[in-house]
Length: 384
Image: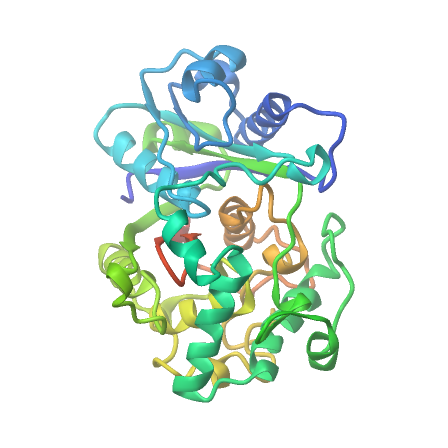
């Protein structure tokens, strides 16, 4: 995995974008990431996308962008897809299949009025709906309630995750919700699905982002700091016909595998980008990745532990999906972009983690209470 490097990243600054088509957004973020890397569309020989790519996926977008590709990947596992794309691109580069890989994601459900991309009626929906799991928030509320029952986790502890996100978002000029909130604000917001309040829930925005991965030879020619891809793993969890333990996510498998590939441990991580579709998602993921013991997440996230720069484990310093952006109802892409910023020392000075050498990024796809994906990346600062 260390034979691949992230040379360029870009996050679209818009959160409401009524005057662009989805293909135009893909093109804008692609050009932004390539410019960041010091490359052009003519350099790209591999393209990666998920279901946000319109038309016939890569066939349409490769033509639209004017690429000449020898490799393409359309992995679709929900909000963790882009982390999988990074891992798959790293493997393709290591195998000599390509030298410059472009990953793009874009969507605009906030202004188009359409549901987030990929929200299709799968074969499981008729079974889930019988039991009232008709909305995503119902599913995550069930997970949160179970965690509270088993481990004594409180709503105030979950609220600490939103507080940390908002504390970071105030320094992000593009964040949709830049206002700092308190625990009382979270607990006082309307109950959406017990025990999750409105401020426990993510936002949905227009936007997108892109990543450029390159081979070592290309990286050396660029004359700029790159980020090393050190470890990657992805795993999946299903409801097993109702025999489902709601207290853990698929991160219990993807995390250890990614750490092992990178040759590091949770104690080595300086910064973490954790998918935050809801506050409970962050809490369970932190436990499952080994940053604390199972059932200890409530105590771990308290007292500013997630707040940069001095917290025990700074998390989502751009404001995350709770406050900054959740393009197309998926937050994996911005997590990668912010982790790269941290490792390059390019995050906002108020939230930049000092001597940030190792970062973890984790994405979640699907729904924790039924079927979900997990993808974990370990990234390292070049030369660290």
